[in-house]
Length: 149
Image (cartoon, rainbow, N blue to C red; front, side, top):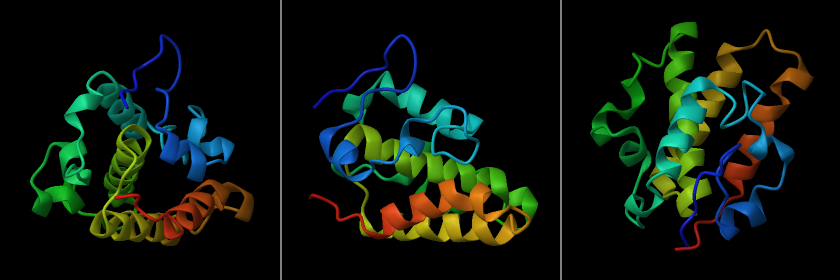
């Protein structure tokens, strides 16, 4: 199924994404901790929405980020401390871009995305429980995701 970028807002999600990721956070463009609310996440989903046919069944987070698989964890710098939050946000945005537009996420990439969210939660320990909720929702939904492949 081909999806595209509407004139305004997020691109249409494939049915498998829409069926599993039902929380309003997945359509939020304003919440910084939403998959597409950060600059990194929005840029990725917007860019790939213009060329969704380039995402196939073998596409990975590295594909979405346009990096070698070994470089994913350090695309914006090492994923360490608060400086690593930008890298984490980009990886999380890439995972959800792949899910939203292609409807799949391999087990290795799902594990990476869960690790990234755990890193974000641990690093941003100053957030209140309510402020953490977008990340907690994404983590729970990713943990229960079964790739339809």
